[in-house]
Image (tube, rainbow, N blue to C red):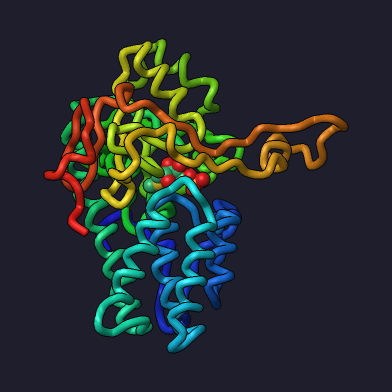
Length: 341
Ligand code: MRU
C-alpha cells in the first residue's frame, strides 16, 4: 500500500467487510457483510458510498451470490439485478455488475473462485487508476494554489487514494497546494465527517466550510481550483456528482476559478449522450431534518432531497481519468476513447 492509502473494503478469509461510514469519524467499526441482501442494503444505507467503492463492493457481493446459489445461474443473475438497483446514479455500480456477468459468461461460468479473481482485478485496477489520476491531476494545478473540494472522494469512496482527493493528496505532497477547503456537504456531511477524517489522517491542514461560504471564499481569491469527483460522466462531458457541485461550477466560472473533475474510466458512460438522461437519486427527507439536528418535522413541513446534480460539461475546465487529462469540447463516445467491450 502506498503512503496515505487506506482500504475501506476488505474481502478475506472472514468474507466481505466494510468500514461503516455512517459512524465515522467517531467510531471505526467494520461491518461483516454475509450475503448479497446485506451488501445491497449497505450500498442503499450508505454504509459504503462513493461511486468506485460501491462498484467494488458489488463485485465482491457477486462472489457472495455465487456461493449462495451454487449451480443456479438464474438465481445468481437475479441477485445481481437486486444489487444493481441499490442506487441509481453512479454508473460504477452497473459497470461492475456488467463486468461480473461477462466473467460468468466465460468458461468457468458462475464460479466463485473465477468471480473472486475478477472482483480483485476490479479493485486493483481502481487502486492503480487512482494513482495515475493523482499524478496527472497534480501536474495541472500550478503552484501555491488554493483548492476547494466537495463531498468525499478519498479512500473511503474508492479502492485506493481517491479521485479528487488523490489529486489533492499528491498536489500537497509535491508542495503545489497552499490551502485546502472542504465543503461540509449537506445533508449527509461527507465533507466535514469523511473528507476531514481523511485529510487529518494524512496531516494535510484544511478548513471546512458550509456550502454557502463558497462564493465568499472565491470572491477573496482564496481558491484557484474546485476539484471534485463524479458519479457518472456522459459522452458530452456532463457530470453527475454530489448535490451542490453544479452550484460550485457556476460560481467558479463567475469568479475565474478553474474546475477539475477527477474520475476513473468506470465512471464514464459513453452510451448516454448528455446529463439530462441521468437518473438522479432522491433520498428520504428525514436526512435533511436530522442534519439540521431536528428529529421530527413540524406539521406540513416537507423537504426535497435530490442527492446529485448535473454540471454541464462546458463549465468543467478539465476531466482527469487514468487515460489522461481531457479538455473541452468533450467527446467520450469517440472510438479512440471508448473501452473495448
Ligand atoms: O452519496 P455519495 O456519498 O455516494 O456521493 C458520492 C459523491 O458524490 C462522490 O463525489 C463521487 O461518488 C465520487 S467518489 C470518488
